[in-house]
Each structure stands twice: as C-alpha cells, then as structure tokens.
Image (spheres, rainbow, N blue to C red):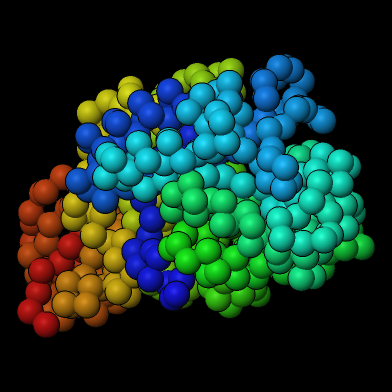
Length: 436
C-alpha cells in the first residue's frame, strides 16, 4: 500500500481534545460527529478523532492536581493492548472496543480516528502480559528509561522482532475496529535525553514500527505524529513514514502563538506534498475548554481567527477543529465553509512566503491552472497597509481584476500591486485574475 494515497489532501475533521480533554464520553463523540456530518462534511471535514486517555478509568478524579492521573487505572486486554473505558464508552463492553462507535461514525459518512501514546502500557510490563503470537512478554520489550515527560502511562518499545509484533497486534486490533486515523503522541519530538534516546527524536524507530504495522494490517490508516515542534532535519523521515507531523507544541487561542506560526510555516513551506503534511495543530475556534475546567469561547479576536484560518489554508496544513460542534455558531461556521479558501489546501498548489517582518507577512499560492492568490497579513498591533507587487507574484501587467476570497469583494489592482488596509492582526486573501 502507498501511504501517500491515504491522505492525498490535508486531513480535515474534529478532535475531542480542545473541548473535552481526557474525559470525553461516547455520547459527546456521537453528538459532535452528528454535527460534523450535518454541517461540515459537505465542505471536506470528515475525520472524528477521540483524543488522549480514552482507556483511562475516572481520568478526572484529581483534575485539580493532575491532567494525567499518576498510576491511574487503565482498561486493557490480555495482550497488553489498551481498550476503551467501558464506563465512558459503553458500546465497547464485551470486548467490542471502538468497533460499534466507529461503525456509527462511518454510517454518517465520516471517518474514525483515535489518539495513542507511543509504546506499551507500563502496567502491562509490570504484569508481564503476553504479546500476541510471541513467547516474549511485555516486560521483555518495554524500555523503562524511555518514558514520556508529561504522561505516566507508557514505556517505549524496543526495536526488536517482538516489539514489532506488539505494534503489529495493536494495528490489527485497530483495523478490526475500523480505525481510519491514528494520532500518535510523544513520538514526533520526545524532548528526551535518556540513555535510550537519540536526543529529541529518540523514538524514530517506533515511528518506523508503526508505519510497518499499518502496512501489514492492510487498512489505509492515516498516521499523525505529535507533539512538536518537529525537527526540520528529520523532515525526510517524517515524510517517509507518516502522513502528518506537528510543527508546534500544543497550540491554543493566543495571538502570540498565531504570530509565531508564521516563522514555523516559513521553515516548512517546501515540505507540503500529497500524503505528507507539516501540521500547524488544531484550530481553537468556537466553544472550547470544557474538560479543562475553563469552558469559554475562543480568546482570539475575529480578525485573529481569520488570520489563523488563512495561514493554515495557504500553507497547506491539516485542519482539525477542537470546538463543541453542537454549539457551533454561524459566524464561526462561515470560517469553515468557504470553499474557495479551503481549495487552497490542494497540495498541487505552489505556495511560498514572499515576505515576513515583525509587522507584516505575505504568502503567495499558485494553482496548477495558473491562478494566483496572495495572503496579506498585518502582524502589528495597529492598523496597517500591506502591499505586494504583482511582479513578485508572477502576475504580468500593471492592473488586473482581483477578488477578496473571504468577503467576495471585487476590485481592480492598480499601480502594479495588490494592496489592502488591514486592522491589527488582520488579513486579506486576494485572488488576482489574469490570462496565463
């Protein structure tokens, strides 16, 4: 199987983390899947991803002290594989796993995904649970020095035949459930300097093992790597073995994080290709934060939200929403359903940053048919006019008709430039119409 065929365009969908944190329930996943199918599926939003600790029993028991409960009770099967918490995911009871939930998501015309931590559960190693089809047990493949800095659930897995067999059994289980997407955490940048690692990409062998296991399970499962920031020197490795990789740490609704993403996108602009996507992380839009004890509407202003969405699209990043979609307002929905903006995600487009200073940035995107779009960004804290010469965009002439893709406003670009007066943190997305 060609892994690049699994996601020819940047994956788009919904992920439970930003709203529900570690404690999402089956009912919440189902209701958000229904809202996604009804309102956003026609525009390409198709993945429903259950994020971290779906296997944890009572994960919020001490939420005032811990996001991830140390040595909490986990649900797993006899072969050291984590299974959904049956209290939060009742359809998983009786060994059915995520099969019934995935079937329901598929019935809506959507695809189903899950978050996993790299490695093998620590409790499985302590109990010396067997590995399916092998004589070795979990403790013999676990690397006790290869641990996540922020989550207490897993040990890394040794690069050996039994370790590969464990990952093969894991993906065979996921395939039987109907999983279409895996977000694997603590693997893109481990931030570790333990004796078992090779610096910040010490789990690279586990990326390769996961990729092989996906190929062997014979189901087209998109592989997404977290967290970032991804290492630019390892771009070739991410692209060879995964479909998406995070170029940032967790991204939230903070303008300073939006502004910082321009430098990250500049670094990775040449690495967007069919099936291989640098990932700007989730879009913190709408109603978020419920599981974190601080339910709120996004803290980004309207101009900042549109700037974020414009950058993600012109760069070609995957798009994952974290909002409570059952409470999605029309204004936010308008950011997610502009077909002409979403068309910029096409990896066949040639994108590049034309200019970036501390106060402004300009990106250009040229389609395979020759159309040219320019994204003008005001990164400053005051109103500012931003301009880009048509010549820099490869557009001939001194005056061409143009259109702002968010508003539909049509105008003539005169004096050989596309120009916009922008509010603080605002943007304009301009398409120049010209004969090739």
